[in-house]
Amino acid sequence: MGALPSGLLQGERRAVARAISRIEHGAAGSHDLVAALAPHLGRAHVIGVTGPPGAGKSTLVNALLGALLARGERIGVVAVDPSSPLSGGAVLGDRVRMGEHGAHPDVFIRSLASRGHLGGLSPAARTVVDVFDAAGFGTVLVETVGTGQSEVEIMSVADTRIVVSPPGLGDEVQALKAGILEIADLLVVNKADLPGADATARHLAEMLHLRAPHAAGAWTVPVLRVSATRGEGVATLVDRLRAHGAAVGHGRRLQVARDAAAQAGGPAALAMRLAAADPFVRATGISCTHAGAGSAEVRLTLRGEHLNFSGTCHGGVLFTLADTAFGLASNSYGAVAAGIDAHITYQEAAHEGQTVIARAHEVSRNRRLAVYRVDVVRDDGRPISSFTGTVYIKSRQHEPAAPT
Image (cartoon, rainbow, N blue to C red):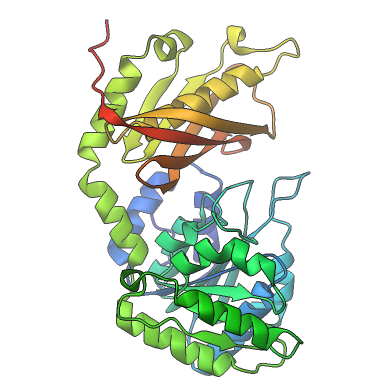
C-alpha cells in the first residue's frame, strides 16, 4: 500500500493524477507503484476505440461519455494523441473534443503522447488503464491515434474493441480489412447522417463473412450506424458494449500479462545469458537489468568515449543501446530472431555522467515475423530516442556459450 498515493483506491482525482504522472515520466518508485496496483485490478470494463484518422473517434468517445454518465457510471479516458514535434508531449486534440464532459466529477480524461509508438497506443497507456481500474472507474475508454492495418496493439489491452469507420471509406476499407477483421468486436460507421454511410456499412458487413469462424467465437460482430454529433445510435452502441462485456468478461490485458509471466523465468534467464555472452555488449559497458518474454531493459552510464564532437551522446551509441534491447527481447523465446529492418528517431540529447535506459517490448508476433518497439530515456525519465525493429524468426533454437 505504501507505494500507492494516498486516496488512489478511493478514486481521489489528485491521487489518480499523481499516480499517472509518476508512471508516464518513469519517476523514482514508478515500478513499485505499478506492482502495488496489481491486487486491485480486474473490475473495469476496458473499451478500445480505434480506426483510421478522420473517423470521428474523439467525437464518438464524447458521445459515449454522455450516455454512460446518464447511466450513473464513472469513466476514465485514455486519449492517445500524436506527439508534438517540439515538446514531445501530447497535442491534446482529443481532450478538446471531449471537453463537454471533461469537468464532470465522474470523468477523468488523460491525454498521452504517442511519442512515435507503433500500434496506436502510448508506452504508458496500459499502466494508466491499470490506475483507472484500481481507482474504481467502472469503464475505461481507450482511444488510439489514427490507425492502419498493422496497428492493432489495442487487442491486448481492451476487453471490447470498437473499430470506427467514416462513410465513404471506399477502397480504404479494403486496405484496412485485415486489421478490422482481426480486432473488431463491434464495427461502427460514424457520421451515419452523411451520404455513403449505408454503403460503407454494407461493405463492412460483407467483409465479416470472410472472418474465420473461430476468430469471432460465440459473439456475432454487429455493424452499427451512429451519428455521434446528433447522439443517434449511441444508446444502442452502449447496450451492445455491455452485452459484449458480459459475454467475454473483464481483464483481457491481465490474462495477457499472466500468460507472459508464466514463461518469464525461461525467457528472462535466456536473455540475461545472451547479454552476458555478447562481447560487444560487455565492451561497451551496457548491462541488461530486466528481461522477459518479448521484453528487455538495458542501460549504459555515459562516459567520455560515448560522446560526439558536440560533447553529447553519440547517435551510434543510442542506436547500439536500443538495438541491444531489441536483440535481447526478440531472441528471448529461444528461437533465433534475425533483424531485417530498423528505424530510429532522436528527440533530445544526453550528456556524460547520465544513465541512458532502453526498454524494448513486443508489438506483434506471428510464426515468422515479430515487431518490437524500444523507448530510450534518460535516468530523469526524459525521452531521448525511439526505435522500431522487425525480426525474421528462424526455425532453429540457440543457447549461448557461457561468457569468458
